[in-house]
Image (cartoon, rainbow, N blue to C red; front, side, top):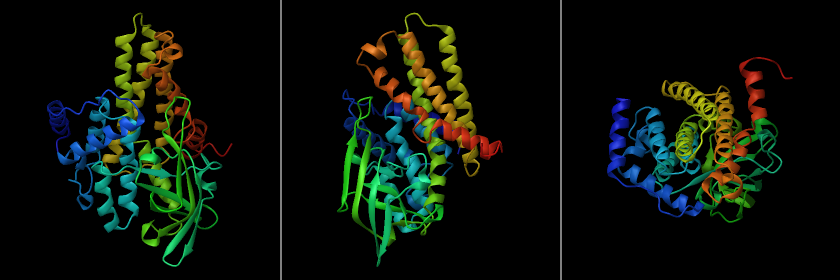
Length: 362
């Protein structure tokens, strides 16, 4: 398929089909808008390109999915965080779930019928994911899960969760399940962050019964699943977020009354460097490469570019962040976490040093 024609046809369709969000900007409104956008794109076929036919897709390279996300998020039709969950979780289901389960469930996610989340981090196991303690114990044809997860994005809006549990000691003792969040024993408590949004949640599992048929892969495959999932967070998902940051850069140019060309240039250079790197990652994914620790470079560049952009907003729009209740304030506050979420900047640099540059453990 000709990629440029695909993009041109998609742009024409988006021009002809008004998916503009309503005036409400709450998280609840964003999730409703996400479902609306997914439904429209799925019914028109756009949301199905780049996905295997076996799960309701129309085939073609993953690059087509990146183009759809770039156009949708770049037009501010959906927020990049919620939109990206399909790109993170659907590939995991396709690779690790039983084929019949993936065929049943993935179309529900792509069409906006359902929202999913990932239950990885715990109060004592954030960046050190291997130390997680949520336990799954076998019980006949079921597993019984007990434990707590935290920083679970959009759990309060989600129907299902890809959950990591401990079934034995060590890395080989981590096992993944696909959990229905309306199961008895699950309690979800949203957390309001300093930017005023309850995007994250604590999720408690108390004697939750999960059928063995909902295991993703085999016992002990959870660590491998997590290592395969995380690069997706740093590939197509980043491409979408870059489109969003470019749109915000354009807004800054429009609003800045006395722009400092050096500061604007520095912010643009950081964004452009990130986009060039992310483009290379997209093309590697298109060519069938298996992404790995190299995506830590993408993560460091994203955090740098995002914080540089919003630092420039603070400098060129005096008082906007500190005094005005506008989207710039909440976005500036959220950007402070860019060096934390998805793996801290320190850990990403350690991965780059050890696994890409072979600089040793110190």
